[in-house]
Image (cartoon, rainbow, N blue to C red):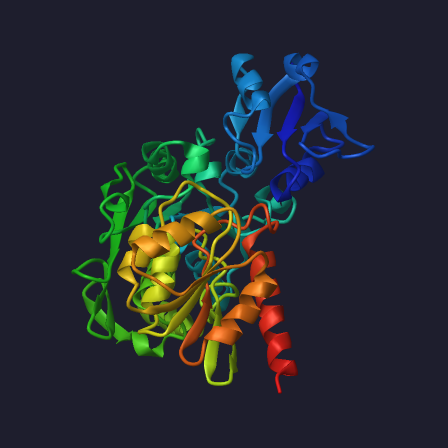
Length: 429
């Protein structure tokens, strides 16, 4: 009988999986790095003993180990799939995906439910391996999961009680190879839902709103009538005005949309419209997402390190009227930056670029008509240069690229930026 488990990648997902299965079953581990003693390394000879493998998001689908497992007929799952197989109907799962907005929506949803007094767990792509929750959850708990396309690609029976799709544009084409594969991976979040479940979609996004399935369907829009929609400065839920969005602590229509998703999810979990709206008004901005850092000599510095693709940076740039110094660049995911730069060429005074995509930013910046472009090697150099050239307006770190190659994740990148700016503020003459 096949009883062993394989784990591909020992990041947060792999570590949580190993902690759960170790001492329960034979566990074989594969990672690019040397894991040292104490781990059984996954080899081809072990394939015959594997019931299935749990794949970390960072392991590419074309990796030789993944290809070998497929050829051997070994099922490969994400941790989302395995978690639900273990806990079954014990908990209520709210799964949230989208190219942008999924982190804010996930955190806001968890916040609203906690404010009501529910037992809530937040995990997934947000930085906590979901298998680490298996021994913590109790009957009737709520589990809010931020789900990446990397995870959703490797589900089969995963069936959340509530699925939210904030939007679907273009991202991670280095991993998915085609836009169609990326979009279909996102849409899988609701493929197993039935009439008892709920799917929330963005009516303003043609791809997200095109998802099909058997679940009950509710919509959010900033442009037209929907189950939750914005009219002037008021938010309407099921055609009833429930309050002004000026009472929200988050800025921008994109955040109104994120909070509207959270409100609809909370209502489906038993909150009244009034309760959900009031709790949403108390929700504060998250780190690394248009996070105000400091004002230095009349210039505002913002950390938007979570802007890891052009669409996310588009939203950030849209939040400022003019006189922007943009710090951008990082890992190459196959995106074009020209449409972004061309849209905001009249607002961007200076462009400071670094990372693997630096030369592409310079080329496409010039094509868009931006003349003040500064290539640098490090984020520290970028902050120093930004201070030197920016006399008014804002300095915005919103890289439109992943952090890989220079940092382990966007949080590490954002933390360094914040530290550099605060240090500069503390030492300025």
